[in-house]
Image 1 (cartoon, rainbow, N blue to C red):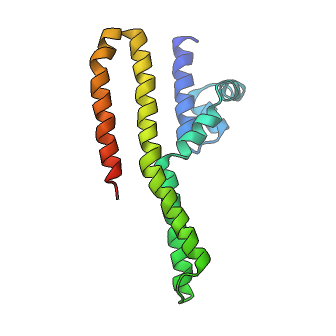
Image 2: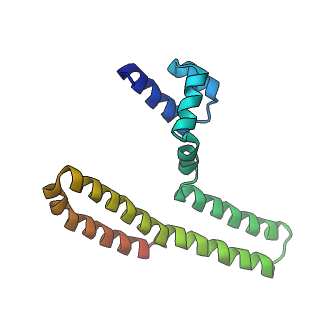
Image 3: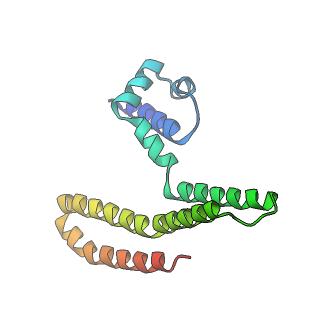
Amino acid sequence: MGKKKDKEYQDAYELYCNTNLQKGEISKIVNVSAAQLGKWIARDDWDLDKSAKETSVPKLINSYYANLALINKNAADQKRPLNTSESDQIVKITGAIERLRKKYNLSNYHSILKEFAQWLMNVNLDHAKVLAPDMLEFLKEKRKELRNDS
């Protein structure tokens, strides 16, 4: 790709993954054909990237909180205490929130740092050796922080 195509590609990618614009709108904005945009989307699996961005941990947690609020609202609207099924749902949802906040996030930090360290070892081994202890300390601090998260 030439410099102009690289810029068009990047702009199209950002618009596709980070907005709700239609493909036709994106192709007009970045000045590429709809066919070219479709090729990029299919070839580089932009739908997967878009989906991953839309299902982030904070968004999942917010969705769980919305479900909790709905369960409580339904019981309040009917002026009754929570029934067994609703209580069970609340326990499961709060457990899922806790797991997402703590274990999943620590695992994410670890995988990203590991991937970065592997990349850095190929680029500059001496620099990787210098950063490795700091990366481990960062993970230890994150673990403490996530454990104390309420």
